[in-house]
Structures are given as structure tokens and as C-alpha cells.
Length: 445
Image 1 (cartoon, one colour):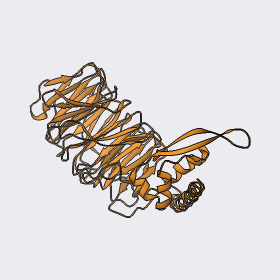
Image 2 (tube, rainbow, N blue to C red):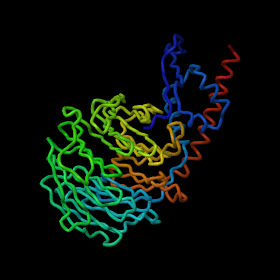
Image 3 (cartoon, helix red, strand yellow):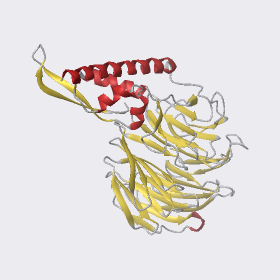
Image 4 (tube, rainbow, N blue to C red):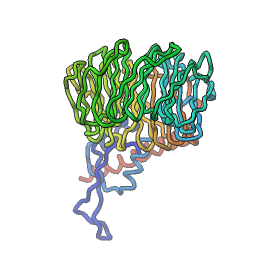
């Protein structure tokens, strides 16, 4: 459940006719975007004053449900259901194409503008597909599976037939592709890193092994590479055009499940299991660190705007600017562990998904909640176009969800179109009654 308001319930010294102490609820926190969406301003002002109401916990829960349900409908363009858990998705920067991987041992390619979401093509693998990558214009794409296969595709020229396949000795855990599709980096479970020049007949040009398996890979727009290992450490290798060994390692005895590198603005950001976000310069020196609380479980950056969004296992969602270190711009308590986030390169859209499969889309900050959508199952991956107008998500039910703000929504959860207006009316009615009740109490006092 997405927590869009916090209500504290305690007990007064008063008793009811049955001798039981009367529970009182107090709304103690709510984002401005939700305050402004309620539609009954005078009632809200009374509620927001912090007056304790004699109200049951059930009514509190109902109020939260109403507030959550009155968010704008999601611009869901289409959905597609794979045959098993869907783990990974990537959208091209121009928002035209997408690639998804599933435990049904298939890779799927989509034209985002397809009216029905029918794949352009699909390809059968021998292992579960756990990571995918795509170039900025969608002309080059890649997938890796648990059998150690790495596939390179030109989906617009050769459908789903691989241009080449490379066999690793272990399951592929992470992939990263340069924006122009010229380079592909893959990491496997035994700690091997592979660099491919995609247009070569013999594409492997470099490999290296770090201790433990590969946890995460990041490749900047200009081709600077950083990886993290399952046994700890952030390894920075520099430009893929001249690789040898790593240039430096940071925190080699610490676990960093999340990493992003932005050499354009001179930093590497790593999310650690100890709940801290680390900002490291390109010389390997610590610039700053900030505590989120809970392990850092999701991370995304905007190099152009020097912004970072991070989510944690304790449900914290934080937005940082990197102008003078890690400067917290905004924060939001989702209420459930956050396992996926996405930040558009232009900084206009921030998305997050929680353990229960709720997706929240914000504007430039968490005070502007634009829409919410509930998939009903854990969302493993979010991917967004450069302008944030197109986003894809994949979930445990095997669903691929495509949201497109440039077109009129063509789908929604079953019954959502009927439920939303009804619940909005009910919400206004509830708040009106509560406001009237509070006003009567205040007049009486």
C-alpha cells in the first residue's frame, strides 16, 4: 500500500459508554500534491490543523484509501503478459522502442506506439533472461540469461535473430550499453566482466575478473565504466576505449548493490547495503555520503541536471542535487520497500515502484504526484525515455506495462474507470462530513 498521508492514532483519557478509551486520530503529514487534490479546501484546513478526532482506525484506513485513489489515472497505453516472471525492461532514449526479458526464457521487442502492445518480435533463449539493454535509438539491443548467453540484436533490421552470441562460463547478472550501441558490457556470477565492440565479427575486445560475482554495471554516455562486486567494492575502469585494469577501488569490503557513473559531471554514485548513498569523484575519493535508512535498493541519475533519486528497503525515497555534494532536495515516505526507480534525463519525471507493485509518477519533485498505478505484483524494473514521457515496467505476474503521456490512455486496471469517480465523490463526502463534525466541536468549545 502506498502511504500518501500519515495518521497517528492514540487514546484519550475519555471513555465511551462501554468503558473503553476513545481512540483519536491525527493527520500529521501529507504531501502538498495530495492536499491540493482533495477538492474540499475548507474541510482540509480544519483537518490539517492537527485537531485530534475521536475516530476509529478503520475510518483512518478508509481515509487513506480515498486519498490514494483520488490521484490522476495513469496514462497506460498497453500491457503485454509474458509466460513467467518478467525481470527486466529497457526503453530507448527516444521513447520509440522497448526490450523486455522474462523467466519464460524469451526476449521481447516492442514498438512503443503499437496500439495493442503486440511484440515486434521475440526470441527464445535457453535460460532465464535477467537483464537487457538498448541503444538510444533502439537499433541495437542486448540480453543476457542464466545459462551465460549474451545476445546482440539489431531488432529493426534482423527482427529477433541475434547478430552474434557469446557464451560465458556463468549466469549473466548485469548488462550496460553505450548510447550509440557501439559498446556492450556484461558481468557474470563468477565476477567476469566482458567488453564487446558490437559491430565486430569477433566482438569480445577485453575481459577482467574481480572477486565474487558482478552486482551492478554502469556505463556513462561517454563510455566510462564502473562495476560493483558481490564480495564488495566499487571498481572504476575509466573509458572503454582504453581499458586495462581498474583505475581504483572504493570500499572493497562493503556491499554496493546499486551504482551509476556520470563522468560528464565528474562523479560515481553508489548505493550500499548499510543504508548510505556514497558520492565518489573520478579519482576515487569520497565527496559525500547520506543515509537513507534501510539498504539502498534502487538508484537512477540525471547527468544533465546533476540529480540523483534513490530508494531504500525501508521505503524512503530521496532526491539529491550534486552541486556541492549530496544536497537533499526532497524526500518521500512510500511506506513499503522501494525496489525500482527511474529519473528522466531532463529531470522532469521521477518514478518509483514498491514491494506491492504500486507505481508512483512524480513531476520534478515529490510534492507533485502526477499519477499512480497498481500492478498487483512486485515491479522488478522501470525504464524511462529521456524526456520522461514514456515509461515501461515489468512485474512478477509477467506483465509488461507501457505508459505514454503523449497519447490518450487506452487501458487501465479492470473497473478502475468506474472506481475512480465513485471513490472521489466518496472522498469529498467523507471530508465534508469530517469537516462539519470538527467545526461543530470547535463551536461547542
